[in-house]
Amino acid sequence: MNRFRKIYRLALALFGMISSMAAQAGRPVFLIEIRNHLFEPEQVVIPANTRVKLVIYNRDPTPEEFESYEMNREKVIMGQHKTVIFVGPLTAGDYPFFGEFHPATALGKLVVE
Amino acid sequence: MIFPARYVVLTLSALLLVALSRPALCNGSRIDKLYHPYVQPLEHEFEFRSLDEKNASVAPGDRTKARLGYGQAVSDNWFAEAYLIGEKNDDRDFHIQSFEVEGLRQLTEQGEYAADAGLLFDVESKFDGDLTELSSALLLEKEWGRWSGTANLFGIYEFGRDVNDEFETAFNLQGRYRLNRHFEPAIEFYKAQNTFGIGPVFLGSYSLGHARKLRWEAGVVLGLDNDTPDRTIRTLVEFEF
Image 1 (cartoon, rainbow over the protein chains, first blue to last red):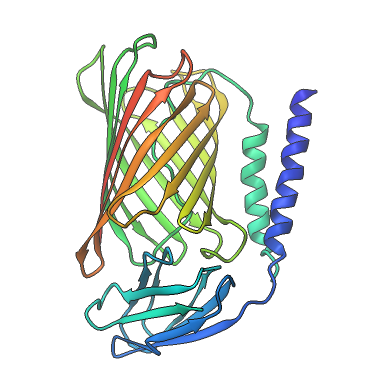
Image 2: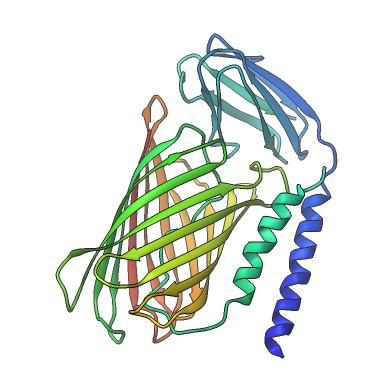
């Protein structure tokens, strides 16, 4: 009987978790492009304490990897493709990011204010 | 935004497997690395990890287990890896004991929902005996500022002539503080039928240029009951390219 009670509680907890996952509201969207191994724009201003969606278009024919330890994000974007990176909520400050495949040129930052 | 139905079905299936698994005897400690629910397209890696167990009261005594693996992303959200596993214990010198193949499926984009989710599927089979282990795990990760929490919920089925066919479950948990990319302190907790342990672990990574990276992990997990090794030293080195 205890076993069924445990499974019932697990199911309830799971339902709560999935409901919470499903309850995602719309987020502000910011566009970034990669051209000639450069991020455009290099600096993007986003609101503090808000979940935002970065849509990144890689216009180059070669892949690039968006990486930011400060944002805890790492994502490969194939050439001529786009990807979505969800970030936040972040506190006010600067959050640098770079292209792992072209770290000398592909540099940018999120300014959170 | 709705959590996609197919992910709900996959998640429910994995949890159901974990929930319906019944307690049984299991062979050895379940202390190992924590899996994160992410896949990087184009990524290849070599991985070496080891477990060194000090067993004062558990047969077969002290044990060292090492595995060498190669893995690569096979699509945008699937990563496959194969390992050769060797073991040395009080009864036998070091020998290649088994092989393992695993597949990791990333289910959600990082930060898209309240928690990030993935699934792990794994087959391990012994060379020197008739024992195969099938397992699947739900991988969850959640971040709170610089803190990240990772949970792995395993359902495991062992079968073969050398073992009583049995299900078991395992629950692994890691709390990690992202201090800096080279050094991150963490604490890990392990609970399974014959495993109950907790201990500090340290992680880090070094960029080697042009998408090449070296990741490392090292820690000590202390047994909290008589079935768990008194202490397990676990290490991992991973070369990503």
